[in-house]
Image 1 (cartoon, rainbow, N blue to C red):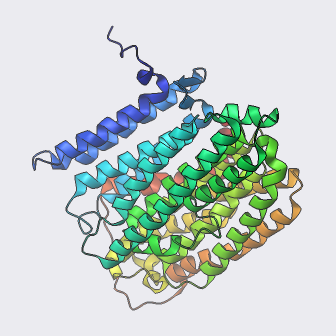
Image 2: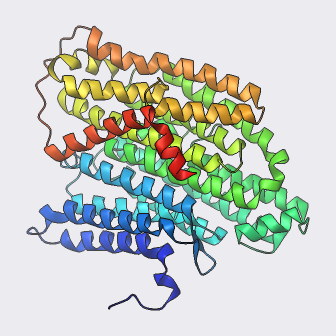
Length: 474
């Protein structure tokens, strides 16, 4: 029987990354020839499915390392599956809308998969060097995607703003990693945690390094006060790219955030929990208050994304044996609802040419199925019962209460109430407001319909039967 070469590169920890990277390179070559361009999407989906299967079948194997760089365990596998499925759904939904964005569709698919490969490295890193490599692969790819509409000034501005700020915070991350190495003598996060617990550290360097790394990660996941780039970048980037940034990029960032703090800094929780609590409250309030005043649905979803970063940050604050499950469950519900919302937003933009809430007036009369899927999405993001978003918020709040972070839980509940107001504006616009828009009955390609139906059904199933999923993870 043929086997992969006996080399550390070909460990199970690297299988999904290798497959997805090869698929991305193959997409570039297939895009060179007109005869093969129509199959590029299907080749990418096949590569994602292969990566998904390789990740899933490794669940029952013991944790495996790639040298000292990557640790393949239940944590990384679960996050990897979430990232791969989210990317696949975005690829399917993108198909209809890419022709109006760029003529370089195969290149778009390829860069999207390279970004995913970076995200997979981020959620599985064991060495701070690999965190940097994964973050840069992801970030550089997203810089390009944000500016893929070369003739659109808003897209160019979005890419330039994200690139300049991203480069600045990359330097901060590298400086923080250097200080952490100087304080502990290692890049391995488990060894950093051991050195700290045994007090074998240089404390000034350690605290400075921790603060710098924290700043860089907060920028990547849009935590206040490092969020200022998010609304402008999300609004200027093509909507399909914004959907990717809101889901895959954010989930990968929080996966890396949690992994770093879980393995390297658990014994310093007394030092950073207060700081993160303040940042979480700021993020919740700034995200939700600004979302209340938006007239653009796309910009509202950008501020909504900031507020959801606050909820996920609460999961890191309650760091413990189940905190990874808290963030993962929340991330899955958030990703499903967000992909649905952006998919339908692209449909409305195509019909009306606008992202404003007024563009949704009367949408339910001609397109009831899409309207009800948007209702499910908005209810889940708002945390309404019987949706995945409700259980995600409930799980985080109960964990926070168990840790006696009462003020933080109260801030989260108040923010959730504010969220209900602006999410329900969309529902009211679709069902209860008369319109001058002449909506047509929209006939979406079957794969896009299937993807949106899948996200909506999964949102309901995870809201009604969350125990099946949570028990599996635990």
